[in-house]
Length: 420
Image (cartoon, rainbow, N blue to C red; front, side, top):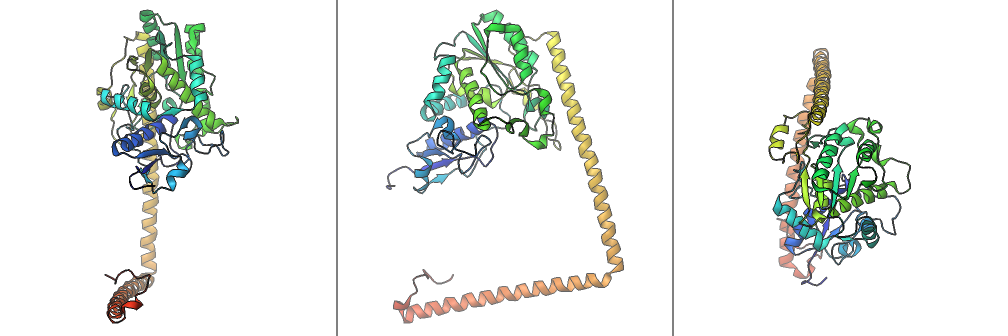
């Protein structure tokens, strides 16, 4: 690499990363920095694998980014590693990676994201062809895209993540918008089987979805600590790669729709970065921001910055939202009780340990004095060792200076300078 060539900048997220579009937002943050700094961006999802990496190559590559995209710059990862690269240090916090994004990004951030996508994001041709076959470029102006986030976000309610609105709310909003704009098709992107059935009962042949892996709510009834096992551990050939492909296709198809109804999600946010400025976004705001189990409530302050529901909800839908909030409250109360019981157990164990220590001190006072004596001897020996190290360093330093002055041709090659 010549001195005038821009240095490579390797972008990665510490393994195993998170959802596909959450990982993508980290990539955008890295692209933003590389672009502003005049660096050549290179995405590394090979040495730093994601949840979507397969054990075997996909189309001849092990880098999960290259399953779906070309590298954003002129360098491959292998080439970049030979050219003294910089890297992002696995940084995940930044302008594009807020933990709890609002429904619609700020206009300046949205414009910057679209600019980065246009400049750096290069889809594999076969993926672009699949999107074109479903909604050709420019043909979705009279279509409504709806993204409904469910499954773990409704069941596990991870801390500092939005609690999504009910599927019934999304459906009612789609119906009201359809009455107003008379859409030709409604494209639905979702991860729950129940949601597809709900929308299909209303829109029938006008509903458009892609064949994808979806989960029934009953199948994710496992602790949050189990992670994404309910999603990623499935007996399907190249299942992890296909999960990434499906959610990528969902977002790209949402971006082709003239109107988009969505909540606060990285999927819909990703769709907006690929969409033209003419796309109209209709807010279906989350119901709350889930608190940390040990932290204060932040839901009310979060909702202040979230746009309201696009169209007035019916009394029946509002009642469904209340029921969802009741479930959230019950979940929070259960977490509080679990934390209280756990703290009680921990306190009891600490008290028991203290009693044993006090009993030991009473029964074996001589052992405690011996332990303290040994500790003092260790401290004294450590001080002696440090003193000897200092004297040795001084001696070597003086001898080296003396030797260099006396016999400069004997300067050892491994000794660049005297000890400081």
